[in-house]
Length: 377
Ligand SMILES: Cc1cc2nc3c(=O)[nH]c(=O)nc-3n(C[C@H](O)[C@H](O)[C@H](O)COP(=O)(O)OP(=O)(O)OC[C@H]3O[C@@H](n4cnc5c(N)ncnc54)[C@H](O)[C@@H]3O)c2cc1C
Image (cartoon, rainbow, N blue to C red; front, side, top):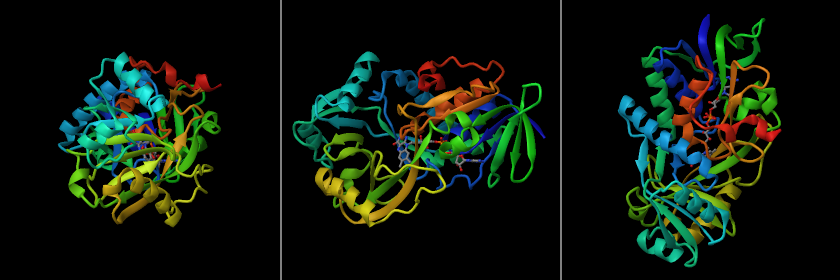
């Protein structure tokens, strides 16, 4: 069977790309090795943070502005709540790159914000207990994206536009067609052909794209949900999402939403990276202790009984910026590794970019030069 584009991996990014291609009238096939959605990759655990004054680099801000628009588009199409604005806090000691980076992004892109001390944050949002002298950037547009629900929304919207999507069908390999144009994709069911190929296989991308094998490193993470002693302080209207650099590490968290307990985790949890098939997927008492210690210190009103613990995967690049580019040897193949622990909020705009790169023009109007693979050579 022949398609315009085949998308490998129908997680956060692949589902959005499939919708973007289908709504442009392309014949698109999406292939997913597990269920849709699944809890094997990087997008489960119900929610992800979205924020605008990006401390990682101000270069992401124009992409974020478009991401917000496209989240609202898919919400309207799917008639489901996918983006919830709660406000966001980026807090650390004053000279730390987290606060300084967020402030720089906010100023450079004229993003509405307030600078608060830790003490002022604690007063305004009593679920928090930050050190009084911390510096915090509050941004009213920060919030959460319902990650698993968004995959469902993108897939349903793609199907409604005529896309073909198969779950439980693993791609075993692909090759460029003789003559250099197009691809042949082999799965554990059968073989397909297409003009272009998008590899959005998350933690598995190194298995399908040799140039990424040493540049996209899977890492185990753990999320915790704790039931607050005062749950009313941890609801979306009263509890902004946060990124917090403290002596114990860099942590993030979100209000109670779609599951009991407020949710949080530590970036690069225990530093356990390795081959995706051997990374352990359970979560145990040591994970729970580490996360509870953090909550008891910085969110004591939130640190009631544990409601849930889940492991999940980051896929890290060496500089923790995304890879969005063509395969260096096969321009009909698009590589998408937008993770490094902060990619979900971009799914909506990454879907658009991937559809651009795999589309007729093989080009995008978005500035993604800082995400090209060549920077890592
Ligand atoms: C604990 C945790 C917290 C996070 N918090 C945030 C946050 O707050 N904000 C934020 O913006 N980002 C966050 N992230 C990062 C974000 O979730 C990821 O960037 C995003 O989920 C990556 O999406 P993806 O589509 O690349 O991967 P996935 O959603 O994992 O999709 C890849 C899919 O490819 C499939 N696949 C793999 N190989 C094959 C194959 N051979 N054939 C067919 N299918 C295949 C997989 O089964 C999978 O479904 C977090 C990540 C984790 C783990």
